Image (cartoon, rainbow, N blue to C red; front, side, top):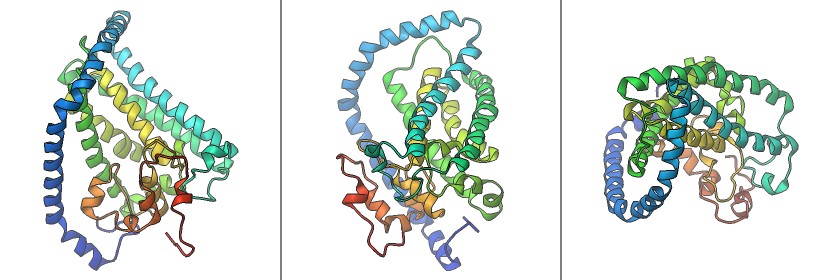
Length: 333
């Protein structure tokens, strides 16, 4: 994007623009290959999962019908309660556990997996106390009203609190659509916020933390929280006319992933947060969630030359990647 903070020189920008057609072809190839692979695996993998889903489906359907009876005539309240409380609990339980580690520097069995060594050991308490009120304000003064307004928008398509829970296959399709839309909307809104005129007034607040921690996932300007945090998550359920159960799972999963991406620890058996951590470190790399659009737009070139890229793997053992893949003595990345 033109004039981004920390953007490459003009001739390099022109070179990147010249790759647009190539990016489109690569996009078509990736999506086409992914579709073929998805169709090939669909019947074999999901058949087993469908059996499990069906076995437990009667139990969840019965519980859902009890909730509908309890909140009969007050479905809007059930929707608001479910779509705000459950994801918020996921966020604060996970963030709270991480905060204990961040503020005490213990236990060492967690801190040894720190990505940016020597940072937040422990976290600055003054800086943290200044950040928490912003996180709470974004949740209660922005997220909550948006969810309340979201209910009549969904009602326009259908009933989000309808009696029948979604089938397993439909739920998988919804998650695929949600994820794709979030990647596209977050990537471009995020890059837009890195334009100098917007960065200084809006996005710079979030980048005060060059070594992020979990709770900082929601530490941002109110405009950014609406445009780049909330809307990319809400567009998918709106387009799909989703059931409340799908929305609760999606919002909870999204908050867990964004908290993990900001946590500052590359923990075993969890998705790698190296990608977004590198964005906080360098500012002009790794704008997306999945990295697909960063690859197509070449906004991960520096990342791919870094040690962080080598460590951007699913850790399947207990050895910290900073030990197995240490920085070179003269590494400046």
